[in-house]
Length: 260
Length: 254
Image 1 (cartoon, chains in turn yellow, cyan):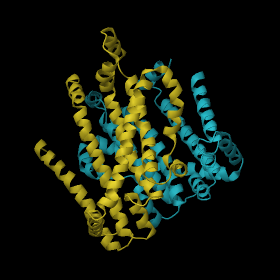
Image 2: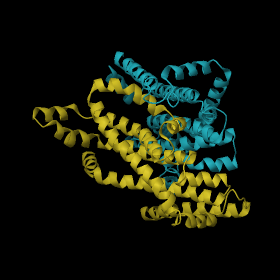
Image 3: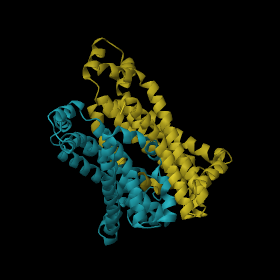
Image 4: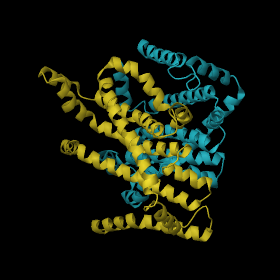
């Protein structure tokens, strides 16, 4: 088989398989005719009715806002705490037991407690998202800082580079690839927690739409909400990898030349 | 060893003071001693251990199924570029779907059953494992494979002697991540759908406003999480004794 034929076959498969899966879903649902598994065409219709754009402003925007603010707080606090903790053995000894405990805690276990302490409005949802998104970023920032070649920091010190510049120009860039790895984990976590907290108690948001659809047994809107949440997760991931590509362009280039 | 212990003690004392001092009312934040006392009372009942083992069961079956499904599939996708390309779009689309979104669907289809809990845990644990296994198999040193081929090692022996051993570190990382995810989702299923287990207990205590019990259950599930995490780290160390990454870890610890 010529390489060219192989490449076009491969591309064909990449396009054909998803279409095939969607077709099978449509055929199966038409055949089964089960209201719990609506047809693809029904789901897309519901999706258009709900999200484009009648409930976009009332439910999608608040959810996005919660995810982004919570995630943003987690990034700032995680990097801000991670760098000093990564640099100091003493700080690590103090901090690690707590970090280890909280990152192993399943987030939903604290939903009832967070409601008792913070209520059921945006404050609770945003702080909840921020709290649990913090740990992957914090751990990766600590590891990233610890992994820096000590010679780099020593060199900067012996050349009298001010501490602020050492952090900004050496430590932060060197830890960046790992911090981004933590951010990717946190962002998917943020979407999950957003759905869970809204599902538990909320008056708007996609999680609320989901719970409302369940309580009123409306399968169409429920599938449309699942589809939307999937797209949100996909879109946010894509956005983050675009940012990562820009911020870490130097890193990729360096790795590519180093491996040659 | 002294400072970490001291650090935990300080945090517990601060908790006690915040609650007793009235910074946050004792009704909303029961004191540390009261919460641990409640946990101690619970630990002595069979109800607690019944729920505890239900949660562990959901976690274990979910994780086990995910390993059985994701590892062979990951090996297939990692060793054939054609297969990887063909399934790339569906996987990239399904992977970020937050498993939380499936709760109402499971509630209405499988209902409040162990199957729902297992499905959710398996679904969540499946993706990190699949991705890790695929990467691991894909990352095999091409020189090792070429060498084996030029010595005439048969394909299935290449798989078992070269590809799989070199993918094991990735798979173990995947298992560790997946085990955390599986616990979260088993617990979530119990909390949100009412499948039996610690999550259901938490929901029950929360509904009756029994805050001390709510805190006690949260402590218990936190300890279960930490226990599972360390068990997985130990397992990883054991399985990868021969691997350089573990040797360097030990050197770094010294």
